Amino acid sequence: MIRRLGLLLALMLVAASALAAIDVRDFSDPVLERRYVDLTASMRCPLCENQAIDDSNAPIAADMRQRVFELLHQGQSDSEIVNHMVERFGEYILYNPRLENRTYLLWGIPVALVVLAALVLALIVRGRRQASARALNLEERARLDALIDEEKTP
Amino acid sequence: MRRWLLLLLPLGFVGIALFFYQGLSRDPSQRDSALMARDFPTFSATTLSDETRRVDESLLRGQATLVNVWGEWCPACKQEMPQLLELADHGIRLVGVNYRDTREKGAEFLEEYGNPFEVNVFDPDGSLGFDLGVYGAPETFLVDREGVIRYHHKGYISPEDVRAQILPEVEKWQ
Image (cartoon, rainbow over all chains, first blue to last red; front, side, top):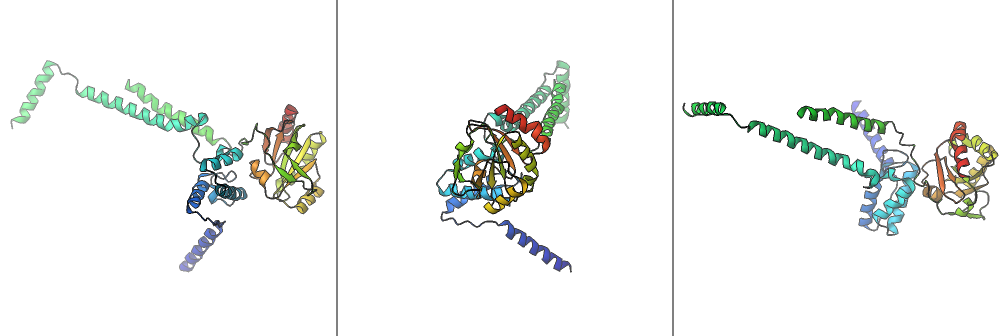
């Protein structure tokens, strides 16, 4: 019984993945195909909010894939194709926002935090070092020497 | 000195938490159209009612126009028709874009729900919709007399939206 359920489940999964493979495209050029795969994976579907257009069944995602396919065959570069989409659907569709005035903060905060952390770490380490190497007064020096001598002579 | 540095931790945490909280409370589906303040895209298409008549973007010059993207297959489009008819009654010019539809279905729709549009651009393959960045109907654009997109309403227009948003925007750009 359990085995049969498992089989059923497996079959359902196969059916689902068959449905997800929505369109078959004919690429004469493997480089174009590679670029198509990369481009459609790098753009977010405007309707479904967190699926790439290569992963979405939404009609608009299918339209966008079709457009990417056409533009690739017109010989457009990757950045031209990305611009074509951003002009229509906005920066929203980019999974990797571009570096520009509006996104300096976005890209800058992680870098700034790493620099800050390094700075704090350096300060702490320096503080510790200074504390341990602080000059000893005569009395302390004498005690330290005595302790070391004691260790040396068993 | 070190005490002061420790204070940075909670402060930094609060700062970042506020930043993310503000991001969480924003609705990602309510974002501005990429075409805001840009020219209405160029196009050339036939009209829904007359397959021999060709229209292009010059259709939208000379007078502020509401461009409504609709289709017979779209339930929210049916629900907003009374509001569009009301806007037309106010003397506002409306142009429809019949998006991913057939002539028969489009005509049936107008027959049943009324026709507030001066003309309907027939866009069966969705190419004009694509250039407008439309990803679901209904969507409505306000185009000023120079043919520049000035306002974008995504989704269903409620009677409240008419009063609070559409009418003031039209007034502003007329």
